[in-house]
Length: 511
Image 1 (cartoon, rainbow, N blue to C red):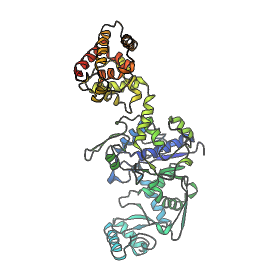
Image 2 (tube, rainbow, N blue to C red):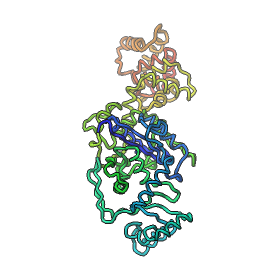
Image 3 (cartoon, helix red, strand yellow):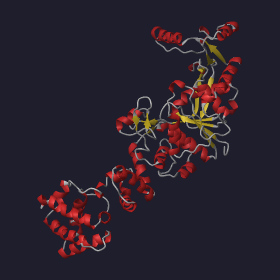
């Protein structure tokens, strides 16, 4: 298998890329890299009615953000192009016509109105669904029920037609899926699918098989929703004479709602307060804005690490992986058959773990951008100190600002529960001396801040534990937060002394 693996990710530009699609791309990428292979991206835009402007650019940007590197794509072409199906239109018609000539497909002239009427009739009179299959095709308007002259006349007159696959009668179709094992389907359950539409564009089924074959794809790794179509694709490979070159298939388990009941959808995300898209999407049709993981503050490596473990495991307890480690340990064999429940809280946990080891300089830059947007001026060194204090206490970079506004704002309110429990005359006495000592300090840093307080407490015979939460309350307004002495250093002696005196005045009712 080594060095001969070629995989493809083939999204449609019909809107933003769902995270389920991102996971499919990620698994393709990991598999290709594991085996020293090649990853292609093909845009499947045969359905022009569903094309959405900006969707292709979104796909490109989303994969780049996730670190999924493409060896060949519309933006980085190689020898297997074109990479958009709309640019390969002529070759599909060629293969469809070839199948007709060989008696493996046929022209069908039934109009959509006629077929719709037949469906209604079957449902009303027989209580069953209508199938354009081996039984029904001999009663309908197609090249199997007409003379060659009649067919030619209709084509030359410009009458619309489609080309349908002639599905064999009483054939057992076998497919060995890399995840699910053998899949066996009988041909009587497959209808004569349209291969070429009346507008000359191929359906997904024909284009998919022709493209995979011509591009040399060796492994098709795609979502479980395509499993019902797999037997049809096997038939197409056989009909086109490519059975011996058919790729191996692996159908990935679905991403499920957090409840585990049903496929994860945008509606679930909206209802439960999380995104199902990697990047923010601005819908060009209705102007609606959908949130994305990047804009919500997720780090790309944390996001992809989280996705990799949805439906796959290494068989160990390890959860944090670099991309290189994922490539090394990834295997199709360890992908689950059952669906993977989406857990947003787990996604946040991954982000927190990655944020703890994120380069402080880069995180400081993100923090400075937030401060600038809030109209707050701050030099890099001060911002870096604040970032260092908050880094292990936040899930998202933006929380450094929201959880540490006290660095730039004097508390207007104080936690009443803490004040009631901890604020008293003894504390006020200590803080009165402490504010003066801090104000008069020559060199004020976290060491000096602690030494001044320790000296006062020793003189008065009071333990540190009796005043620390009250001191934090006076400085920040709340009873918890990062290490306090470094906070005092960042604020500076004048600000610390001022805040203590303000708190003594505002909390006088608790003495």
